[in-house]
Amino acid sequence: MQLVEKRFRGSVVCRVLGYPISYAIVKMLLEKGKMNLESIAVRVKRTKPTVCCHLTKLRLANIVRYEKSGRNTHYWIKYPKEVKRLLDACETFVNRSSRRLDKDI
Image 1: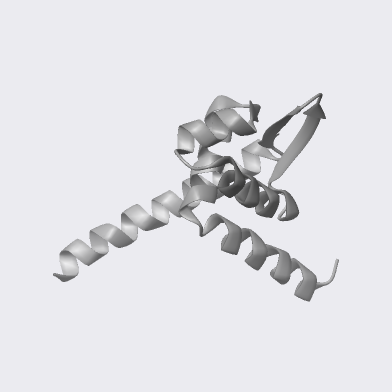
Image 2 (image 1 turned 60 degrees about the vertical axis):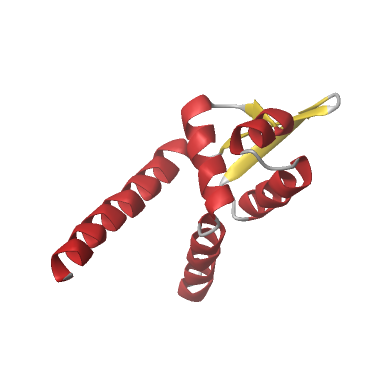
């Protein structure tokens, strides 16, 4: 894979996780494991179409996988260890930069 393509894919992942709802969905799927659309929508307090839109973006970014069984579709994190490390790094950065902002004031 070329360097330009890797950078593009990385930017897609960052863009998708930049949406608070997508971020919340990913965190929840990491904690709870496989879930269906309705359960996700109830927990993030959004409509099913809104959640479905975010899940589509997460699927296209290769973060989430899905499986249809009858009328239900179940979603889960494709690479849980790597995604958890990424979210942990983001949260560490936010915590550290927040402390820095407190000191600057």
